[in-house]
Image (cartoon, rainbow, N blue to C red; front, top):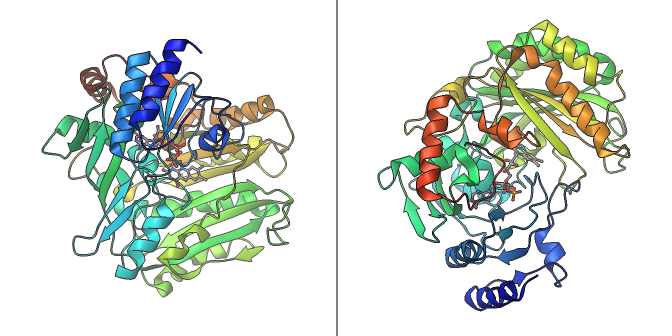
Length: 455
Ligand SMILES: Cc1cc2nc3c(=O)[nH]c(=O)nc-3n(C[C@H](O)[C@H](O)[C@H](O)COP(=O)(O)OP(=O)(O)OC[C@H]3O[C@@H](n4cnc5c(N)ncnc54)[C@H](O)[C@@H]3O)c2cc1C
């Protein structure tokens, strides 16, 4: 590290209220820790921001010293080692305020969905969180955000009202559809390409309960369940959001005995109508095979994590995902051939989510969310419970290749370790040109390090 950098780091330390840490400093490893244990973040400097002012100071410091800027809240989306960057760590900025009169929530950059779910529930309101309430609100939302009520209400990004953004010039900007229509469009779907969101306001939905949860079927029933699901799912109304997942569960003693160490297929189901209507909708899938566990029931919205039962502790995972425009029998057979119960693949999960409904409808104020027109999302998580990363990477690639004949694009939050070029191609040429034009206006030197190559 040069003397100049040391000096300017000291200046930064004096400017920001939160910690400024370099490799080797006490607290550095904890500050850069993430959910994915297959990457170790190694930024040149990490700034533990406590306010928009701290974020702006970190951005100005990075510009001055020729470093790129990355941002991390929970670490659920870490897809590289962030080497040489200035990492802005936002987890200290975790204020959440719910306004029941306007049915909106306003959160800081470090808030997690669990906080919003709990704050909104007393008013009979719910946010458009994803499958895990431990994921960060802002990172999820600027990537689109597809959750258990998506077919009824669309992407989380579709319901953003305003946000505060620190841009590459170190300015703190309040962005609304009126103040800067281009930035308002681009950030909602373009993730951290345009700056760091420090504060986000979005609508809450009038949802207090649902009929749903998951059904675990034994591995032997996988082909029957997947084929039945691909025919049943497209017949559903927008009140139902569903996915089906092949899971290789670890021999973890905290898992229920029927699931421990087994290959199982999980049907995930959320129905926003009455319990009796939901049970009627689900009946054909319940009849496909005898489940190991049927955990679908009437639930308060705060229990929404029960739908996917995502892991809550950091894991050695890698991810890939695409969308497809159809899921014919041949596509299911192709997935079974590379990831079914008879294949010893180092994959923790292969999940197919039904899209359509409100997901496919353009929001009132358009945004840059890519992939909304696809029919299904196919997502895989490789978890080398022993095998090397290369074997996991190859197994994930086999899943992506299996559905290539039907591949349409991808959802930004699920692209995982796709290359920046592949991610950049998610947008159609017109949207891509607009993103590039906006990026050139607000970040002409490419200060923000992202996994998106738009040009
Ligand atoms: C267990 C699990 C379940 C998931 N379920 C879903 C799901 O159901 N639906 C879905 O859509 N996605 C889902 N995801 C993907 C998740 O939404 C993305 O990985 C998201 O980026 C995570 O945001 P984070 O802040 O928690 O993670 P972080 O790793 O802290 O951030 C990830 C990225 O988000 C962006 N970002 C974070 N903070 C800011 C900010 N303040 N300003 C601008 N950009 C920012 C940056 O690009 C950053 O690199 C899931 C991920 C995991 C690990």
